[in-house]
Length: 206
Image (cartoon, one colour):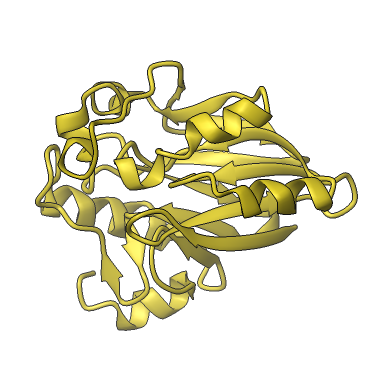
């Protein structure tokens, strides 16, 4: 597995390309934007995206969806508890930064579901707290977790937005993410990478 990170969009969100190096199949995670250089990169590398995965529905993780779908006819997955947020600009915060953005064609997924994409199994871990339907994607075979805005390096996601709950967020991290092996490599929605072991030891919030 090869993971490429692109900090894009108004808030410098980490958008990830998860690539199977033998088949060139790929998964796009949290497309905050769809800059032309990213599409050009994907085409020059011969990548074949199979899906877009959303860790949650805030605008800074979703506003590039339409651009990718113009180039690639692929499904978009998000947790079922994000449906309201995906369809209301006031809730997904896009109304505060733009004329508003919604996306009503996502396929909704559930806790414990496994998505078979690009030769890998992405396990859905529902981690409410930042939003009601926030989730992480765990690729067990590779020891990799895409944590969105649930868990950051030495920090956690904000909980002062609609649907947020600090107690739920901490519970999600303690009861679900901290059960993963220490050497699990964590790719968050903002800032740098980390590991579960590092966060277990040094994260002051958990």
